[in-house]
Image (cartoon, rainbow, N blue to C red; front, side):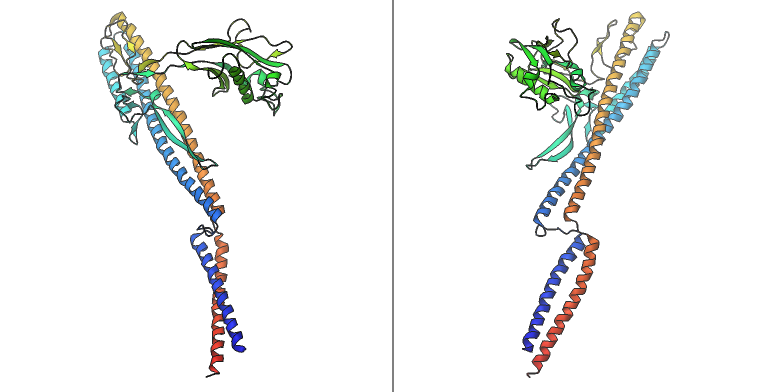
Length: 474
């Protein structure tokens, strides 16, 4: 009987030691890795979520790198533009000096030629990561050229697991200064369109000064009405009457006293589709400034579109939605026409030969290659004045290009800050899911180590007792 009790004590001590060792292994792993969930077996759900978030953070890190490279390219192009803008201003001052009687224009041309050479060298050297946005080659043979450079600006994972990347577009075609491609490029035909005079939510009809909760919405619960005739010619000439009032919005708006711009647009497009105009010919939308815009689907110089305010239905009152330029019934309030496809010069702002020596011989010239050394007499003075005007226009275009790059720079820097904040938020999410409380686990580790020592001693005592009993039977 005593032997049986001794064996039971040994087994209990052994079981206790095993449990302590298992807990000790778990705690040691948490202390060494700093994580309470380091494998799927620890907590499958948390491990899966944390792994996905880590993957997303890696993608966001790549986005951040891309934004950094994009920012560097924008900075390089912007600095080049700034330098060239100063050169153009200096060039303009030299040209004004050349208008002074008695000034040797040949010597002034030597200075101007040096400025022209410096501007070209600045543009050619404005390279970043193998890209140059100021001096390009847009010919079809140069497959590396892209008229619009896309900088990856964001990463998102939808609920269904689909991944999308947002992009920041830099229009190189509109900021390039030099282009070795001297041929013409095709331009696409455009549609007919026109836009309201003010943002829809800024019109009296949409109550810009109303109380919170109703500002920016229109009240169609009473007698307010929008009524106009829309005429389109796109191979077929059609006029339709569009009337937006309480009856028309009854099934389209949740609250007739607070009709939103989306509900209003939907009602207009539904009536256009249901009218004689029909579907897929004219579309109403809001532009980037929030103004009501109408646009044809068809393109070409023969396409036209117009809007004429009409009188309100009996008992109703017309409200303004941005088209009140004329008295209703006295002619169109807004109109637009498409343009035909054509060609335009492919060269840049400074090397496009779009100017002509009008009063002297010499043909056409660009800002990059004009020569004033032969401009003499009254006719020479007249052409010099035209060159100064051309340089002024070039300064305005380069300034505009700098403005565009500045806006791109602001957008990229803002996105970099946001991505960095998002990555830190993801790190916190991962920490909440998988990180261990190291202080708590360290304390637990010391306690388990003490328990392990005691369990080993207990097992040793139990084994010793068993050996003592067996010695009695020898």
